[in-house]
Each structure stands twice: as C-alpha cells, then as structure tokens.
Length: 278
Image (cartoon, rainbow, N blue to C red):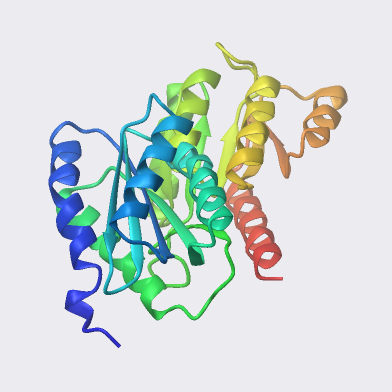
C-alpha cells in the first residue's frame, strides 16, 4: 500500500494551479477521478476525444502511473454537468478496455485548501476501494459520517419565507440554498444536486410544474434523484394531485407549522436514505 501522503501526488500537483485560478475568480470546476490503465499516449488520446465530444468545455487530464489513477478537471462546470460529462469518460475508457474501477465526480467551489483536501480524499477513496465495477458516483466527503448535513434548495419568491426557513433550519444543522424563481432554481440545482428541494408552485420565469419537470430531466442524465417537497399557497385538490403525478414526496400548504415541516423533511430524507441503502 502506498504512503497516504504520496497518493495521487502527480494529479494534485498538476491540478493545483488550475484550482487556485478557479478559486481566485470564484469559478467552479468539475473533477473526475478514476482508475485506468493508461500511458502518456492514451492520456493524450483521451483528452483529444473529450475535447471533440464537448468542444465548448476546456479540459485538463492528468495521470498518476504509480497509482494507475486518471484525473480530469473541467473549466467552470457544475456538478450536474460534470456527472453528465463523466459518461463520455466511461464510454471511451470501456470501449478501449482501459477502465479499472468506479468513477468519482465532484465540483469544487470552496477555498483552495478545501478543494485540494477534497481532491486528495477522492483519490484516497479509490486507492482503498476494492471495487471493480464501472459505476459513476458523486463523491461526498460527508457520506457516512457524523458530520454529514443534508442540503436543501428552497425556491420561493417570498423573501420572508427564505429568511424564516434559512434561519430555522441552519440552526438545526441543514445546509440551505435559496432561489427566487424557477430559472435560478434550475441553475442552483445543477450546481449543488441537493438532497431535498422545497418549492412553491407559484414561480416566475418557470412555473412550479415546469421547474419540477426540468429537475426530473436533469436527474435523467445525472442519474440523481433529489426529493421534492411543495410548500405553496395553492390548496386545490387538482394542484395536489398534479404535483404527486410529477413525483413530489410531500405537499404542504401555507400557512404552515415549522415543527410539522421539520418532521416531514426528516421523514422524506429518512425514506430516501433507506431506499439508497437497499
């Protein structure tokens, strides 16, 4: 077994400059790490192939021969797009019998130190893993730890709702992201792929139904499945029925109880966790 401090050193050193640049300009970057049997010639071929597949995306590829590990960094890409992009990586490496295990994906928007630590943790997870299946996984340093905090995207045009729920649930240990309309909600969703979305039906730019439908379309290519909860002024039976047809887990009408809302959120997230573990 390699010394932990030396694991993936070539990839980390190669990407360090790019990570610093992204952080300095507050730009996110997508990262893909996988085990692969490559040499410099195949690294160049992989890079050329990926640039042809998505010509508007700037891509950097690094390879650590000692660890048999490939790293790919994508300029300014959200987590959702990075997950989609990893399908190109998987297809190419599998077609040439070069992939040797799972693929981990992530998107960095934090400080340089945090991003470097996250990159190292992704590499180390693959080093320790005995898995050989070629599945694509969204890496989370919080998964399976006591420090894990569920992420919630709240989409509502009412600023008082934002302030109330953000203040309450942050104190409860949740990570809260907010958006004021459907368009911003989609942009935030692609960036963070939250555990839960809480949305109003009365939205501008995209109405609530269009917003929910687009989330499900994103889930199709990211292979994600965030839970969705509706929190709305609409109380008609038709609206309730329609949202559940769109795959919503809970429907709560305003005015609402914070205690009841919290209980329903816990139930939805617990059901999601149980479904993933099965």
